Length: 217
View 1 (tube, one colour):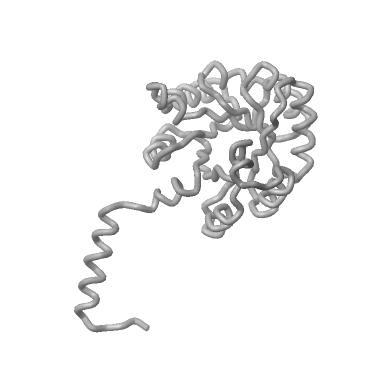
View 2: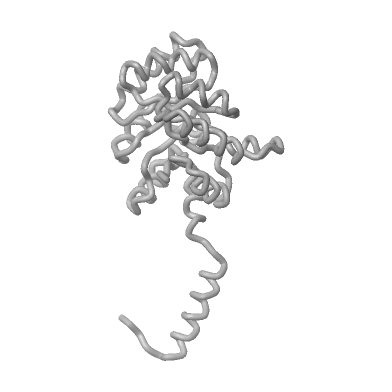
């Protein structure tokens, strides 16, 4: 499973990228606001930092305007994926932009029917939002599983990009089901390395080592 990092913070991306943990980056208007940066400027910097796809989101609501914004965002760098909302106009824009050879990430997906439409419109990625479904007492993993089954049934090449990931268990479940990609905040990715038994074992080893009176350096 590919790891995308969901942030517009350059330092956080660089740290994970140096460890080989970044296969791509996803951003959205809320993350751009949080970064305090100009969208074109920060998107270009991210695209230069990582080799994989960098999702940059349009803010228009009508198809023609989405297409125009998408073309401008795609011109920033060759690895830009234009992020479009899963609306009828977003699907129209997806069809045009994907037809022009641009990567397209269709976002805010909450049903398998929506994912089916996005695949037929030529989306490179579909972004089902797990955490937001969990918030309304629906199991977001059921959606990932349904999309995986449908895409496999018909050979769709659209990649499932699991989004709105809130916990390490979300990551594990997505990997089990077979999501192609997951995108998560840096802090969630770092938590994948944590386990209480690792901490306990390390504490024991260090106490025993101290008793030996030895030094390695």
